[in-house]
Image (cartoon, rainbow, N blue to C red; front, side):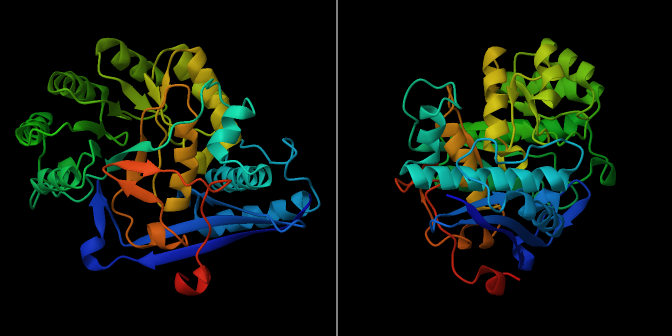
Length: 380
């Protein structure tokens, strides 16, 4: 088998005003998507989503740069995919899309799902068959405004409980300086949230993503109170480069401190592994690819650190991250963005079954999904 063509689709859809979401200092008015398509001379086509944080147009340029190097290569050869190098976000996202599309081809050629292929090929350290379905957590908390109605966060959490989800990740809300928000005021909202959730009688875990917005002095009392309230984890509370700060924070509390979504290589994770600066790591297959992702998983396993992948944007990337979770030695959860709008699943011909917070991976080989027709005309 040989690669005959390599290209990237750049897609976009404007949000209706009611779908726009906001957090920190920015408002998001549209949904973006970058999809890598690899065609072969045997009629097998591989597809995968590159994380749109790399910029779809810039991702397409990198895919075009790699096309002359990959056309004519064997997609089943483990040496075919280029490697991430963590110097350029757009480059690594493009490489991740190429890598995941090649895994899609390998699965289709073998007649196996990607998760099964990851296990049976030895790429994953898991010794049992992959799990199915994959537990999801609802990821949002990006619509509450400290100057308007911060209790919207509570209403949103209740809506996910009603949909059958058993976990949710929230954010810090709009910029605290705009309305004089303090650590105490924030924690007051967290207490109200937990009290309301508990009153439903439904099992529902909460996690907080700090988006690297806090100082260490702010993060420590928040972490201690989140621990008391029973939060599942505290994600990226302080600037990512502060390895020492993360190590101190992780050592000071029992609640898991997590992060690493922007990291694309084992090398970037190593200082955090060695310092026990993360209790859970969160690589994203749309940023690092499945090949490097599994290397990160193996190193995390060596250090006794769990993996819950970061996963934002659209459904095709969700499939890659869900197949990774299914193949983990200790599967936990897969993130699902709740505010991406219709583009999220409209890129696929058929939406996979999601029921009561569980994603049922299709039995079809590869990633198990196919692209909808005329995507570039539908979502220019």
